[in-house]
Image (tube, rainbow, N blue to C red; front, side, top):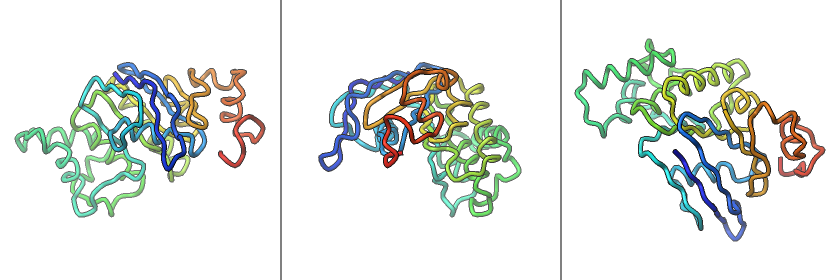
Length: 234
């Protein structure tokens, strides 16, 4: 569903991505993990089209893409219903059908009672769940998550991860999650790619991370300063 080949990107003469290649299959959730500045967020921005690669190719086998941003990115001047309706605008659906989809997706994330609330009236976790509902209103075949649990307490992070797993089961879409959080990539992803200094240094199933002999994933998974990734870059 997603094919990335020989991706390269530089900023101000610094090469952030160096010949990165991977695939994501239908129904699979891939986690992009790694220390800050390793290139994972740049990779996601290239996939979404927010940035253009210097070299390489990205092939998305569907134009139906849902995005869950790190900061929820809701419009505070619009209600929850209106935020979701904005995402549905291009489909030009009858209002009754539009309302049905909105309520169905809000029910899925446990927010049906907040349909006419404004984002400022919601907690951080509720805003994040609203962004989930907005991302899936068009029944996407690809869902991309940018640090979905950043800034949330451990309990709310677990709740958000539970919703991610539920959406995986409901949509059967191909997904990519960019995250630092151990529980997020070990609970929600089928496969993980560890990046460091613009290259992929480990790839495998989350369950294999702690058993691996690869020094990069051992250091990252155990959150230790001992390993090939310099402390200043983590």
